[in-house]
Image (cartoon, rainbow, N blue to C red; front, side, top):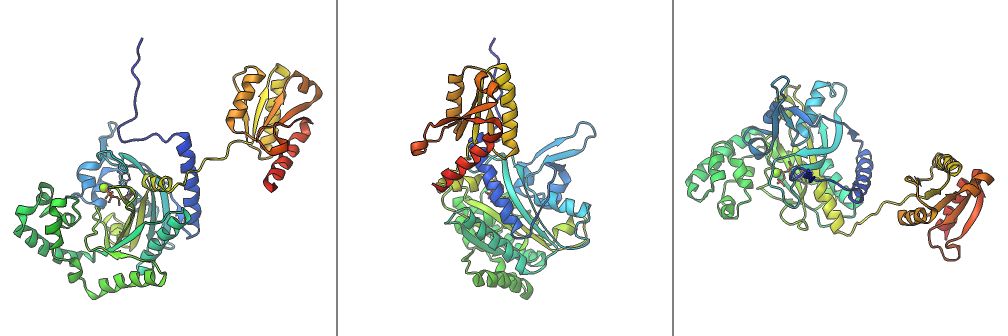
Length: 432
Ligand code: ATP
Ligand code: MG
């Protein structure tokens, strides 16, 4: 009988152990980096009511128009969506649990996001983001904190060549003014627009500025600029962010065409970009979203945040030569015979009590075959227990790591002494 295999969903990747160990290490770096800035974790559902994303991200955005995995809950007819990003759910949770009643919040989350995109390098249908949100902070100081956090993380991860692009989107009233001018301009040049842009002309003309179509670049370059419509307050906020960056010695490039694909942003927006990942070079993006809390039914509160694409960052770390293999276990326990196996199980647990990592041989087989597995495991020691050892209440301890004279050394040790013996050998090796 030939049973067909079931494959993973296109664009949704398995992360196999070699890779997953790398991800674990990355998570550790991320969590200690976030802790060093006083950010606290929040864990949010992967599924949210569809209207949350429509209202937060905006109806006329790529994400809501064509990238969401939405489905109807057959039990009650409710439309649900696999989260395409984390900010909307985070803000919903903050409002729902009244988290800002006492004080502003600095929060972060790590997890899967889902977008129905065309899969390619750096672009998947299930991907992971680290998201950082600060709610209740009005000033440019927090925008700058978020940007400088990025710089420190690239340093912690040993990455260079990630450059900062900065822009301001002003306030809604200023954007409305700019928008009217943009529509007039693009109407005058509508022959040069592609289908997507013509469709967006009256719904979301700002997004035309972000078009990746090379044919549009020239007409976009000549378009009216928002900065000419900004009032004193918006300009001061933007200047405030830049001041902190300059004080910190953080270089940046102002990119007036940086608009972001989500409608909730205002004032500061930024992206961290590398040229080492091909077309998908944005590893981190964010900005201010002062209107969102109110828009989702909360008491008005200023806020800002950013999200990093984990797959892209990990690809970058790999590309920079950051291949990290997790340390193998310390001990492989080899055993044969009934009494020996029972003793071996106790020895293994005893070693783990002393924080020694142990692989316990399972599945039977002779000593020779088991020793091969012990060697292949990368363990530093084999603890070998046969009838002979069991009767004497001893184990045979064999060094598997090649360490000069000591190599392949093998000796008998009483059961109670084996943990100490292993610990002191490890210390000797570390000193050598
Ligand atoms: P892009 O312009 O690359 O489509 P975006 O503006 O849609 O990005 P955001 O919603 O700002 O992306 O998400 C923040 C980060 O998450 C991106 O900078 C990127 O690193 C990562 N990201 C976004 N979409 C994907 C995806 N489909 N696959 C992998 N990573 C992604
Ligand atoms: Mg996108």
